[in-house]
Image 1 (cartoon, one colour):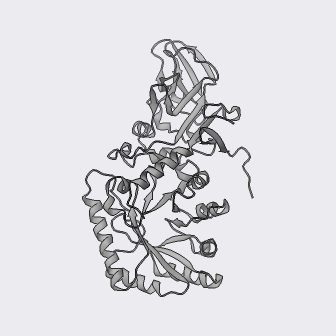
Image 2: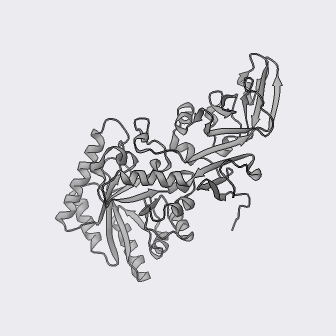
Image 3: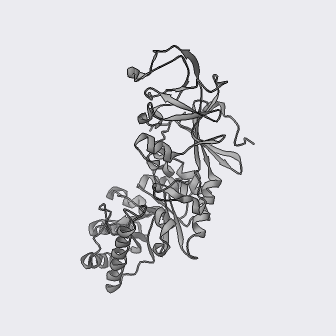
Length: 397
């Protein structure tokens, strides 16, 4: 058994630990916050926000009722790996993919009659039933029917298409994560009005849903038939205005590397490209083999920090494509092979993605989603390694 604190030599350069138990606990805590009978949809698009969609889906088997992706490829990959729960594609699906989508019993967002007709035709050809969720735009400004009687009339036409079932109807909130809830309440009112319009034309979707992570946390009256857990699933805040501690949601991902070089430099030494940092005094610096090609933000140049021996080591100069340099002048016993924490906890110090987002001008969603495929993922369950994912032997067709 490889325990959580063990080193994996093949991943010396950089690796991300993903605590699957914490993800399970986050979902269970959110489920306890919803009314009995409310379905839980886990959003695992963008490869589970960089954490790994397949391991997460397997971990949540029997806990999450549904999964959601952004693309047909993401959904088909889940089916390829044996995930049998209902999957909803939240984004666009090209018409060429409708036959595969129908065959795999994958649901998609529908926001156009011609789209629905093409899905119906694909279902007829396959002699199968296709299930769809009508998407309405109540204030996000992206895809979706307008929440009007005219759109309800189009939806009624869709409901009469053969081999097609309107299983659900949903909308997406633009400002649920803000302290001022007036906009989200307005969106919710429009959504409820649209459902009334659907009722007038005798369209009654079985699953109506609108609550994202922020609404799960703050707006129980909007939970409806199903809630969609996105960023909160991973223990990250929807925004600075949201407090996830009240549900005991905790981050599941941490990021580590090791020191590959240590040296003393005299005052006046320039560091990294452009010499944007000039040593004001004799210093001791360490090189870390991680850079923006791994998804670590270049905008943390001269402003970010890592943790070494429980102390902050400031990034000096520009973050390079594959390396960065940090100040270890005041940190004793730093040598080649010393462990470095880029995201996570070391002693009393912690680096959260929220903090890195503030420093880099990005935000926590972007940071975890952008962690590249050069970073191996190491998965933990019950305190031990249960699997890994890397691209060291990337295959091409």
